[in-house]
Image 1 (cartoon, rainbow, N blue to C red):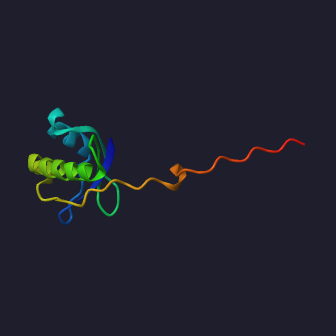
Image 2 (image 1 turned 120 degrees about the horizontal axis):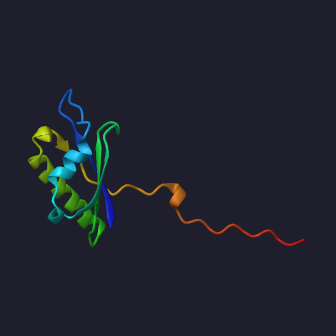
Length: 108
């Protein structure tokens, strides 16, 4: 499963609807393939939609997200003038990187 983030560029002077996540969930069907949706409406410079998708590869997940976002925009009149940005799998924070195990204290 992949988490893919896609920004949405608002038309001039527009703001993300307060209920953006609920709006998105109401327009997606189980057949669309999104396992979970997260929304970061206050992300800067643009709101971000997080889609959890099952896919065979990272490239496939990003392509699926692009298709879903375009589909969503066509199904949401409230977002009709918004522009989807490039979908990307977010980088993992350094805290989650593999680290060598700490050495055990030597007995005295």
